[in-house]
Length: 199
Image (cartoon, rainbow, N blue to C red; front, side, top):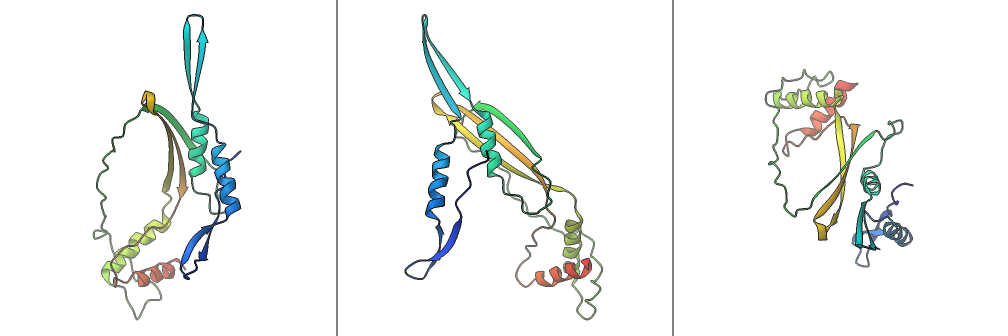
């Protein structure tokens, strides 16, 4: 088993010299064929009986969970634990209503204590706000809090208004983060300070 292997995408130049992604045709064709051969999620069986008829609706949740699991990103590092993933599924009423998400909040580290100056930064000291960023970066590097990867696959049976959903979650230890301070803040200096403190 396993989910169909996606076709690789390579960079190539067009006739005008512009770089564009280009697929490998044989791999793309094999991927398309594998997608077409996947089992259906909803299977409807109609049988005539002496008293009328019988309609049986089957939901292939195993295939749906398998699709969700196949959509998770590949493990990048050797030695990582094999997939310890949590699976769940449900059959619910289908709705085209879009769930409103809360607005994105950008967090500030103004209340973080400043880190001490890096050991080899004697002549060029970090500014207090850079020291606070360094505190946050050191905390991120030392964190053992997992990041939760999640994929959801769904199939809809519109005539009955049903939606089948499968969810796969996998905890991954992902240290680090994004320092997104404005241009000229000194992100490179803070990153070098992090390396200096880790040595």
